[in-house]
Image 1 (cartoon, helix red, strand yellow):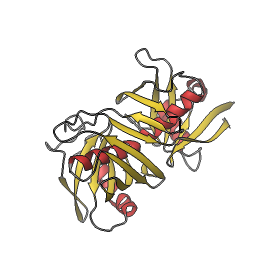
Image 2 (spheres, one colour):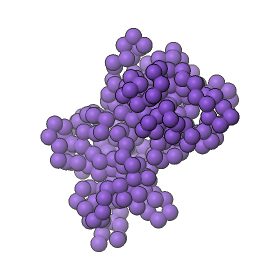
Image 3 (cartoon, helix red, strand yellow):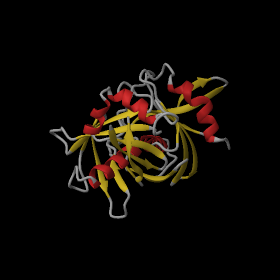
Image 4 (cartoon, one colour):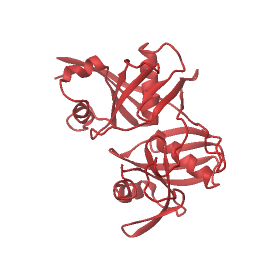
Amino acid sequence: MGIKITKMQGCGNDFVILDYEEFQKFNCSMDNVAKKLCDRNFGIGADGLIIPNTNTEETDIGWFFYNSDGTTAQMCGNGMRCFAKYVYDKELVSKKEFTVQTLAGVIKPQILDNGFIRVNMAKPILDCEKIPFIPNHNLNYKISVKNRIFEGNAVSMGNPHFVIFIEEDEDLLKLAKEYGPTIETSVEFPEKTNVEFIKIKSPKKIELCVWERGCGITLACGTGACASVVAGILNGYLENSVEVELLGGRVNVEWQGTKENTQQDVFLSGPAEYVFNAEMLT
């Protein structure tokens, strides 16, 4: 039986996209399909699986999103850009700006004339109980990991992040690989967490490496880029529009919030590209 699939990527963060009727051909649960397709040795290979959900009442469309290990994720910025381009090109939506139902709430992507996708990622969540983050303060929290003490910032963009600014000239990827897995499962985060290690290049530019919850090292993380810029602005390090350099490319994050007014939406802009369309035999 042939199953039609599409693979897309945003800054190297890659996804398999599967229409719902194609998913049904597998005759198994979505989490198992995600693990099967995302496996880089025995499947197609991807950081996540996306299935459009056209059966929504209060939004233009929705999605089912799964990490490569079969767990669900509330949001994914790079995945949302790929999803937006896919559903617009397939005419599952007819507008260039539309609403998407996710586990993180309603997200609003926009197809720009230059081909980039701009996503209204909604407001950052800084309340510890809602992140969730067990300590009662989320900024500049010190965490002991192996032989190091890191000072980080807990921010949710619909999914939890722990943002660590590195002042020393260290290898961010090495730090993410060595300390990310332990921080991800730290007791401070009852639902686990994504972990970002960041160098500030200037008030308008940062470099970021991420250990993603449920995925491990990925080339990019849109929600991580957003959470990092929010944390940087709240700490007085960054301006309101920042270029984020990821392992797989660059995105731009805008946030007009301040410590006194955190209830401002975050906007993420960047590319989304097709890798291939194919028919998989099962």
